[in-house]
Length: 125
Image (cartoon, rainbow, N blue to C red):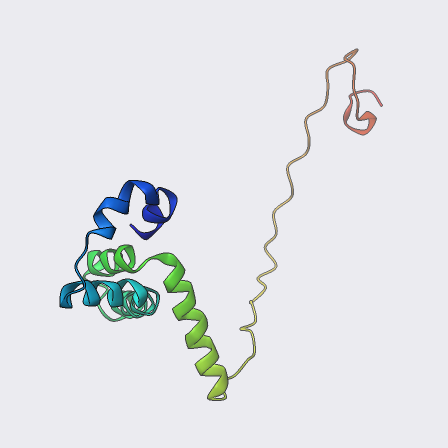
């Protein structure tokens, strides 16, 4: 809603300019200004919900939809900073190599007499 307001603010001007300066207006403005931090909290709760309650996948999806992916990335980055500050290991987990590598697909060859731009893949060269 904030993005829509910023894109077409003249359409919303009659609604916004007529707001009273009462308690609800102050609460509404405070909510809008604090949404980035609140979105980070909601997205972090979505991440934790997915890990702790795998039987309710709809709950984490709903929370992530409400919080947003941007705040989720902010929350993950913030959590990484906190772990680094606490002295967590900064080593990458090594990938175990199995040695099972498949051959790459061989490029098709052009038929005899066809014009070929890549002589190494043309038949008869």
